[in-house]
Image (cartoon, rainbow, N blue to C red; front, side, top):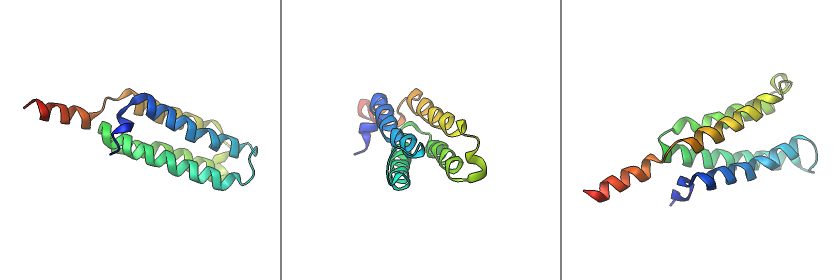
Length: 111
């Protein structure tokens, strides 16, 4: 059902499309930015959860969680580049890993 995210390009595009509103909301360019930010992060958590299970890295969802915490904690929000780095790290780790679930299904079909 969620095998669409086994496609690396789709994962990267979906992550970037969902991450864009977080930066626009953070810059104050969008009215009701807090709600849009939270909805975007929920979407990012979802695709990272699915992609992490497909590539055998269930901890992938923790990386955007750290970015979320850095954005919402006032003392940590002063370090503004950390969420950017963690989002880039999530994209890199999610895209660089091959799909374990599909590889397992292919070897099962070959038997």
